[in-house]
Length: 418
Image 1 (cartoon, rainbow, N blue to C red):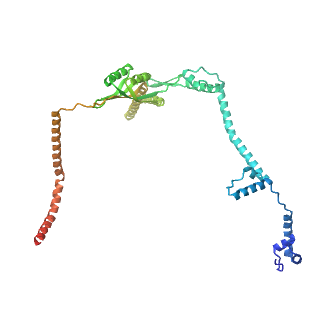
Image 2: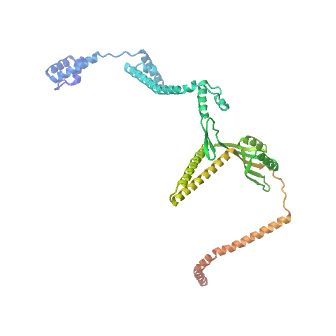
Image 3: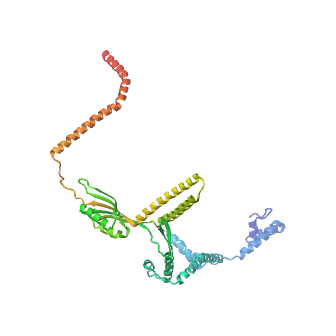
């Protein structure tokens, strides 16, 4: 170690303070520190560091950690893959700061969950408060429709449902009389459903099924909006019909129609047109009121003829809209009153193994007629071809005639020279 330099190195001063220098080197270093202010200052600083390090004590390794390290070292020496240490081994070496941070995080998460659940509980309380009048109110006697809905539910649900049904029963119903809607209280509105049924069936006796179909339609006071039947040679007979059956008798009519044969396909659908009908009723009421106001204006108006004509034109326009809406209303009500049944009947056809063949003379006659028709068509095709492409062929022949003649003449000269 260089002790003859102008300033001692820090490691030399540190070795002097720790007593690691020989006696001669220690004496030389001490003399130099006494004469050099900078080295003396550095020695004073390092003396505090040396004292701190000498006072530091190494903690004793826990026996469990030592055993775990020894076990892992033995496992590693044997070539077995070392898994991650268990949680309790890692947690046992946490200090108080880590435990405090973990506890603070857990408390914060718990407070957040409680704060998030408070609005939900408050909302449930408000709902219970609003539902209490319905629960405490006396329940009216349910009708046949509400009895199935209530069933065996508890008192709370029964009270709420009873209140809802009572509100629905108190709703007014719109009825049209003489083109104007009338309101009736305490009547439950019935939904307007336009029902459609589609049936596809196979019958054994087509003629008998056709007659039974007419009887069923007449029995239920219905009618056929459209009916078509086809009878082809060597093919089953079919019938397609669009029937209109009164809506109350639809289930019975469908049951009787199924007795005609074997059902291959069946589908039923219902379209609720209550809202559409109510809109038409309201529009009709407004149009009637508008028409009445225009007629009052026309009776009281004594101005120009042009103004009177404009009022009459407006009355005509409004009257046209009223008639159109009335027609739509009638059509809509007719769809509700009469359900539609789309029926398709097909005969259970059995093909003949040896169908009757035509006579020999008939077959010869048919062959001659077919041959004559083929010859006529071919001759006509040739005539049409030349009529369509003949002028173009003549033009190309005129263009190519001179070059072909020159080539032929040259070929003959060459042949003669040879």
